[in-house]
Amino acid sequence: GESVGLHLPTLSVQEGDNSIINCAYSNSASDYFIWYKQESGKGPQFIIDIRSNMDKRQGQRVTVLLNKTVKHLSLQIAATQPGDSAVYFCAENQEAGSYQLTFGKGTKLSVIP
Amino acid sequence: DTEVTQTPKHLVMGMTNKKSLKCEQHMGHRAMYWYKQKAKKPPELMFVYSYEKLSINESVPSRFSPECPNSSLLNLHLHALQPEDSALYLCASSQGTDYGYTFGSGTRLTVV
Image (tube, rainbow over all chains, first blue to last red; front, side, top):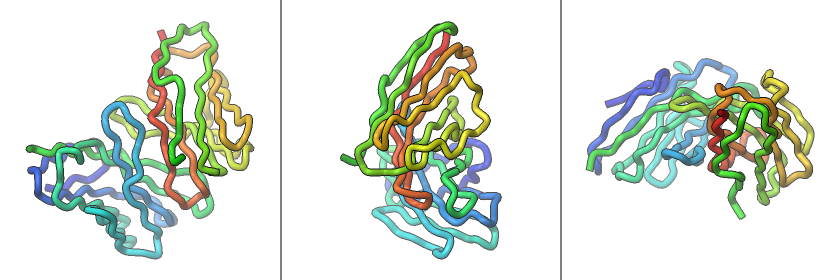
């Protein structure tokens, strides 16, 4: 199932399945987006980023999709593993050249072994 | 070295105490940040230092006082905190405005 990062929903996924985590952003002027993973008791860990001149970017087992028309960002995790269990945050740089990175509310991913 | 190191990892302080949080990075990043994170909430920006100068203060109360002694170090001085200031304090650094920010593991602060 999918979740929108407007509250703190939980997404439960069977190990080996693909996960999709969604994020709606508010500022059409935002030009840089980052996905972070945060495990319990740790700081946010960079996963992947994308600039506004791109629609898609792939990493190792992860893909970020950006739809500027509807101001929507998604993170796809392929072959989800128990180690992927964490809270995932999208973050946006709301103003080009600004150091202000604003985080979305997060989605908790739970992987069922 | 690709890490941001924060000390201490845990801190318990009384409301009349003065303490400092420390952050260090050796990646040559020119921007450093302090974020505050309450349980089950996203990190909230407090301060930004760019080239060792304070560039953003997100209306943070004066009981929090940041300091950037040099390009590798960032401190957060705490004085007369309130119990509601208990949170995870995160330090981060970045190469610029549109590069991935690297976060430390944070200092878990409890004010009693």
